[in-house]
Amino acid sequence: MNVDLFDFDLPEDRIALRPASPRDAARLLVVRPDTPEPFADMGIRDLPALLQPGDALVLNDTRVIPSRLRGRRYRGEDSARVEIMLHKRESEDRWLAFARPAKKLAPGETVVFDSEGASNACELGRLQAEVVARGEGGEVELRFSLTGAWLDEAIARLGELPLPPYIAGKRPADSADASDYQTAYARHEGAVAAPTAGLHFTPELFAALDARGVSRHFVTLHVGAGTFLPVKAEDTKEHRMHAEWGTVSAETAAALNAVRARGGRIVAAGTTSLRLLESATGEDGVVGPFSGDTAIFITPGYRFRAVDVLMTNFHLPRSTLFMLVSAFCGLDVMKRAYAHAIAEQYRFYSYGDGSLLFRASRPQA
Image 1 (cartoon, one colour):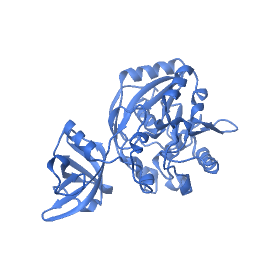
Image 2: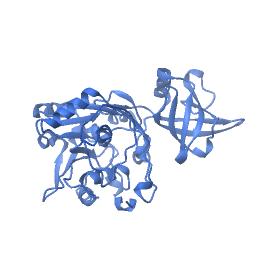
Image 3: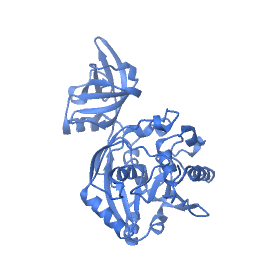
Image 4: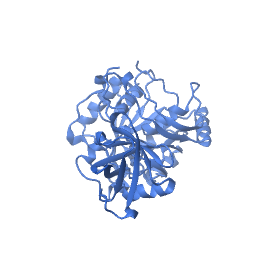
């Protein structure tokens, strides 16, 4: 499909720079494609009433790490400042990352990271890496001088919280973001971007969902920085997704299959949960245990196997995530839904309002 089909105009003032407070005070646009009046303006706190007893809510419990590193590249006597955004761990001492400026890095070169980005810091405040390989689009593979938990500790000490570029370009990260850009149930460290639909959940909202009879299940997908990358291809079939690591336990898979067998629906909190569940589900609709990489790219015409309802924030034009929600509800429906959201002053992107999407009965080709 032509990527231009997924474009739309968004006023700059619709981009949220801070989340709603409290988290569950955000608005919620409900989209039911198969009804005469497909849009309803509600709030996040209405979620329990919008779901049914016996439904299963699936959340991504990944935890964001401070994955933006600033340092200096050394080439003989020459050096230059570089910024690195980690996006996928390959082993105990290797990460794939996006570098800026990428042209300043070549295989075999050394990068030294420290709190000042300078070379004269004490050894305890430094981290060193070798450039193992350089790929397309500014991607590099780095082998660090530390490994395992020692490397994790160094990244936590030297790294910065990776706010999305549409927020970071307007203000610096601060102490409030350390909690705001983390779900209340974040558990497994490894993401470099938050599963932002999950930012709306509070203990009070979970209690209301429990009282409604909606079960709660967790999966883990370590969201990569590739989620921020624009689609540069003219046709969707030419776009390459960056792989992300995820896992669905055997216990969670069995529980979700049991929900389906009883007539309940699977409700994904966020596109990351949806993508992982679809990767773990076979053609027969049975969810299986899963552990590994997924680079699933969902566009209109995709036949959903696992997820019946999707809770998600509002996404960028021409993005893979807007393509995904267009596959879920239909491109025409989602274009009209976003036009409605803009006209009604909904707040967009990571810190913005949410939407609750019910899957169209007849997916668009």
